[in-house]
Amino acid sequence: MAGKDPKGRLLEAAIEHIAARGVSDLSLRELAAAIGTSHRMLIHHFGGREGLWVEVIRTVEERQRAALAEVLPEPGASGGDVMRQWWRHISDPSLWPNERLFFELYGQALQGRPGTVELLDGIVDAWLEPAAQSFMAYGLSREESFAHARLGVAVSRGLLLDLLATGNREAVDAAMDAYIDVMERRLATQLGQVLTDPD
Image (tube, rainbow, N blue to C red; front, side, top):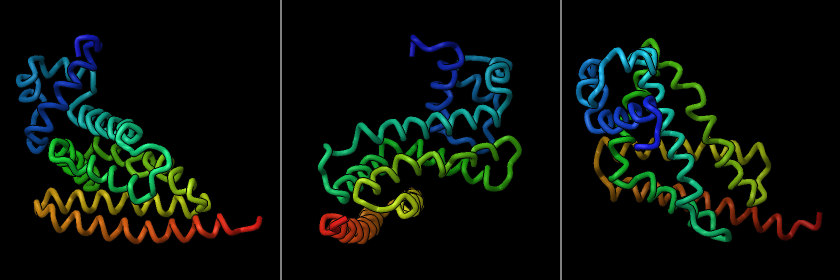
C-alpha cells in the first residue's frame, strides 16, 4: 500500500474498515476517524459518502474479476471443474466481509439511495464477457453463451446471498453442485454435437 497515491491509500483503508463494519449509518466523519484522516479529505478525493461507496464496490468487483484468471484450473479442465473452482474461491469465508459489503451496497442502490444508483451500471454486464468466453469455448453460440453467463452470475450471487444469510454451507454447496451438474450435461451435449458436426 506504500506505493499507492493518497487516494489509493485512503480507498484501501476504507475498504478494509467498511468490510469489517458495514456501511449502515456509517458517517464520513466516523470512517475518517477510523482510518486516520479527515472527512474533508474523503470528500476531496471521492466527492462525498456515496461517491466513496461507489469506488469501494467497483474496486472490490474489479479485484474479483481479476482473480478469475488466477483461480481457474489449467486449460483443458472440464467446464464443471472450472465452475467448482470458481465457486470455492468466491464462497471462501475469508471473502465474506467483502460479499456482505457488496450486498449491502447493492441493496441501497436498488432502493434508489442517492449517489449509489451508479453502482448498478455494469454490475452484471461487466461479468458477462469473461463468463461468456468460457461457454463459447464449448461451441455455444454467442447468444447462448451470454444467456448462460447471465444465469451463472445470477445463480452465484443468489447462492452467495443464501450462504451469507443462512450459513448453511452444506445445503448451498449442494445447490451449486446441482446447477453445475446441469451445466456439465449441457456443455457435454454441445461439445458432442460440435465434434460430430461435419461442418
